[in-house]
Length: 415
Image (cartoon, rainbow, N blue to C red; front, top):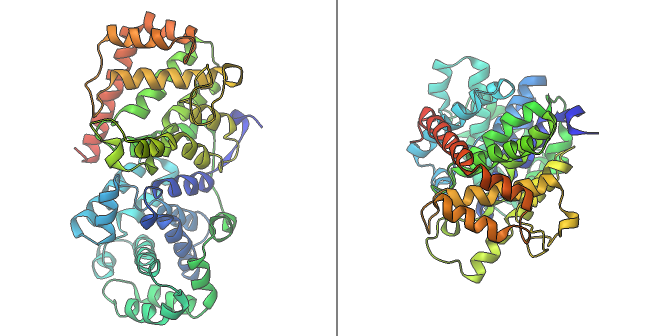
C-alpha cells in the first residue's frame, strides 16, 4: 500500500526510534524499551488501559529523549539531580507540541519527581503515570547488572519497597505482586522487543503521512543536537530535498516522503560516539569504519516501521554514488531512484555549506566547484546543475532553517 494511503501504528515508530536513541553504547542499550516493558506491566496492574496505557508506554519508551549525548546519559544513570530535572523538562517541552504525544509528555515531565512531592502538586493519574516510569527506570538500571536476575530479585524488591517517600504505596504493592512471578524477571533479563513489547499492543493511535512529518522533525532535532556541529543538518537536508523534489515535479505526498527521509537520514549517527562526530582532525581507519556504518544503522532502524520501504531506501542511500563507489551497498546509477539521488545531493550540499569541526562552511564558489567535480560520477548532473544555478536560494533556505532551529532550541531552554 502506498504511504499516502497507509495508516501507521504510532507505537511501531516509537519503539524503533527508542532503540535508536539507546544505540550509542552497550551500557545503555535497550534501556528505554526495557523501561517501557516494565511500565506496561505496572500500568496494567494499576488500571491503566486504552489511550492512557498507550501514552504511558510511549512515555516510557521516550523518557530519556532530553538526553542528547552519551555523557548526559551516563550522568542520568548516575542520578545527578540537575541532569535528571533538566532532561525531564526538555523531553516534556519537545513532546507537548504534538497532540498525539501530549499525554506522554505529561508523564515524562514527572518521571523523576518523588511521590511525596508529586502527589501534592499533580492530579493522581498523571502523578501515578510519572511515578510508574520513575520506578520502571530505577528497576531497569539496577537489574541490568544483576545476573542471574532471579537470584537478586528478592533483595531488589526489598530495597525498592523501602523507598516509601519516592514511590506511591499502590505502585510498590503492584511491583510486589508482579515480582512474585519468576516470569516477570526472566522476561526482563532476556527481553525480546517483538514479543515483550511490540506484540503486546492493545490500543494504538494510527498516523497519516502528514502526521509523520512532525514526528520525524522531532527526531531530527534529537539527532542534530548530538553534536554542536550538526545542529541544523537534518532539518536543512530535509528542506533542500523538498525544494529539489518540487523542482523535479514530485507530487505532494512524495514531497512529504522526501521531507521525512531527509529528517531521518542520519538516525544511524545516534550510534556514533561524539568523540568521532566532533573530531577536528582526520578519522583513523577504525573511526572511519564506525562512521561508515551509520547509513546501514539508519536502514535497520527504519525497516521495522510498516510502509516505510520507500522512505527507508531514500534515507539509507544518501552516501551511495552513481559510479558504485559509495557506501554501504555500493549501489550504481541503475539502482538509485530519483528520490535517493535527491537525498544524496541535499546531504552533501548542506554539509559543504554548514560549519564542521574540521572547517568553516565553504563559500559559494568552492561549493560550486566541488559539486561540479562530483557531478556525473557521484551525483546526478541534473540535480547538481539545479543547485548551482540556484545556489543563492539554497543558501537562503539553509539560513532559514538555522534561524528556525535556533529559535526552537531557545524556546526549549536548551541554549
